Image (cartoon, rainbow, N blue to C red; front, top):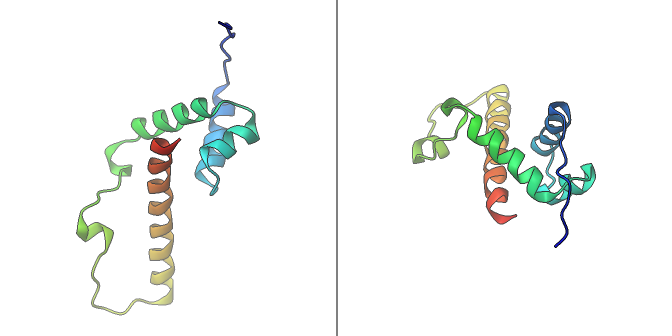
Length: 102
């Protein structure tokens, strides 16, 4: 059995890795390769970051939140904001699903 020394990463480095992960469409595996850390390490950091988030940041998957029904017409600016919000929610959901796949 090979005994490896445990590596310690600075908080700044972890934040850089997490920022790269959250702001890109790259998988955990790709991020780990880019920063030359183990995939399990990145998964742990993502998990800890998600579990430390307060309840306000979690997505409530009730039907009314997933697909709101709006009867009024939206302005182009309102549509852009809706798209940005949905993209952010999609990114968070991808993050959750990747955690279970990797």
